[in-house]
Image 1: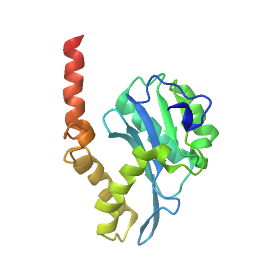
Image 2: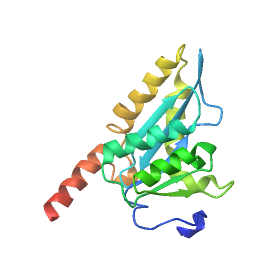
Image 3: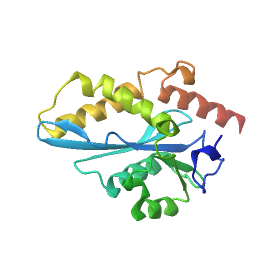
Amino acid sequence: EIARLGHPRRTDGCFTRRIVGARVATTAGIQAGEGKLYLCAVKDVWSNRIVGYSIASQMTSALAVTALNNAVLRRGDVRGCVLHTDRGSQFRSRKLQRALAAHGMADSMGRVGAAGDNAAMESFFSLLQKNVLNRGTWATRDELRSAIVIWIERTYHRRRRQARLGRLTPLEYETIMNKQVALAA
């Protein structure tokens, strides 16, 4: 199953436990009155938590590197984990490859034209579209940025119960599971 994703350096170890998803919201960006914003998010598929993200007015490799670095700051030691992305240029950049190497991470990319390969992130961005972007308009980029951050931090992490997590929120799931791991040790 993992090999079908089509990247020669794909590794098994962290795919279902740690940081493995990154995706730019849309190729066109998210429109505010004064211009577009781009969101790059890193999702830990173990808990479905968005562990790192970056929002900027241009879609560049720096956007992806910042999201990755924010995820590493939140998670700590990520050596051996896999970052799975689509094939966007920001994810194929030398800057991101250097950042992955510095953190001891491997990269993995979905197949061309196979959106299902990145379904975990597609699901997140679909929810963002439905719950935030389709419900309002923003005059400024700062207003839009605030709406996105508030939804991720207040709603998605703390209020949105997820069937795969036993009807827990991502933060509840992490709290319970981390306590169980500590007790077992």
